[in-house]
Image (cartoon, rainbow, N blue to C red; front, side):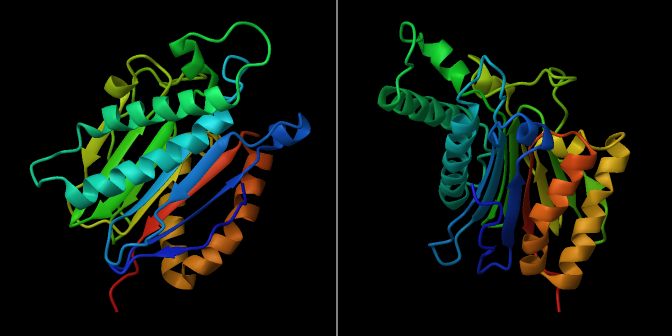
Length: 271
């Protein structure tokens, strides 16, 4: 995956950008980056804009988790775009987790059929999903609605225009230490957290857990929110996108050593 992708600008004013870097521990072990990030192509004029981040688990039980993460972000962006474009006003997004899970499972099955396991018998259905296990974080804006959803660890932060930080989703009681919810679990759809965010928001940050784990505590990590908002407001998204790979590489070097991925949705201040 290239560390920087083209900044995407929606006609509504919102901008998507992000980067993903291989953790220093993965570099030392010659392991690939198992995170992924994707956002809207914006082929539809005035359509919604969505960003998604996924963190493949990377352990021996999940040897194809990097591919699972890449499948997850593409599926999630498409599903949330469609929901933002077509869902009735009363729809709170509660059907999205099942739709995303079903589409991800189908994509996993297709990938496995094309790339079968070389040694041993074919895996059972849920053992197949385990091979591709990943978390998923998504945020999207369209038709005046701002939706966030997540399964597994990682962080979604929202910044009001005045820099006030909120966490739009509750924490999962099953995400602690090295344990996390996962898209590969049988009850994955029930483990999603979903919220529509009320009020003005100027910036959303979606980060894989390698970012937050690089800080002493949540309070120290959350300081990145106002910092990114101020930087984007001052220098614009192209310069931030160009700097992100180097900044994230330094954070993994001095912090968690894990892959770090950051997706941003930002709207310029008025005037």
